[in-house]
Image (cartoon, rainbow, N blue to C red):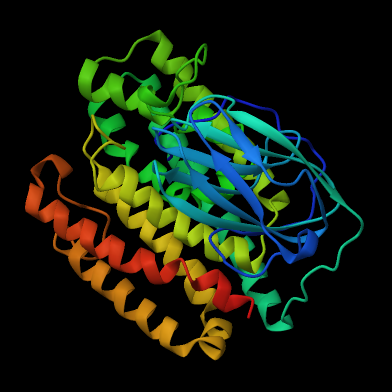
Length: 379
């Protein structure tokens, strides 16, 4: 889950084919072969071009504001083409996406909240789509099935969670909470791509937009662990969570999944760990952060393993490093498992400062090479 959320939007039914290549630094097909320069500040978002031909478009982003910002390429209905969060003041980042002809927006979101400051982007012509290596068709199909399987497995676990809440069984609900989140956390970038589901199911109190009602897992988590009570509202919210997750389950098959979106989604999952799980902010009432942490890593590793045969041909040194760092992170995580064959982790409030630093260092060591996976896949 992101630290903050965009406003709830309704995703259009029509799917638009695209390839998202977050954090890939390939050459852009923008006018004159140049990238679009994006200068983000506290109240402005300046772009050097408003029209580009279809194909690969690269944003060269510089944050000149005083707060961390998020920059996104968006469809008109606010679905995400590609994005980069947590671009700190004074820092730069390169964001690349492959887009078809149509209307888009480039959004800068200072403080990573709200609608943001937006600039229109028109993509013209048919554009020459990147030629996909046919060896990547199978990984994409297998990952799509994996995402569907995770959604299918999540709904019945969420129903167990909701049933306990509706029965007023505090302890049973607590026990069911973390398991109900595993499939979601493994494939969260797919859910986030729809725009409207994630804010309803996985928002923390500090991520609410103005006027947004707090619903979903974390609202119920607070009731169970901090308030220690289950009332009529919580029972209604439990039913709503199941309904929203069934909506996600039905939409997974319509998600646009490509080799590069898989690679960048893996990196996004590591970013989720770094900004929410390691800090203890994600499950701040239940302290079940390590369950989410492990699920994020597993989801990232699944995408990587499916892409590895092609990536290894293009960059064997990179895949060797990724194998090493995934193994190292798993080893560190296993220190906190009560049972090595299950998701029974220690409560995160018992993990000390130095231990958290060890976890953070292992995440960072993996995140750096993982950011290069998309480029290795499309070489």
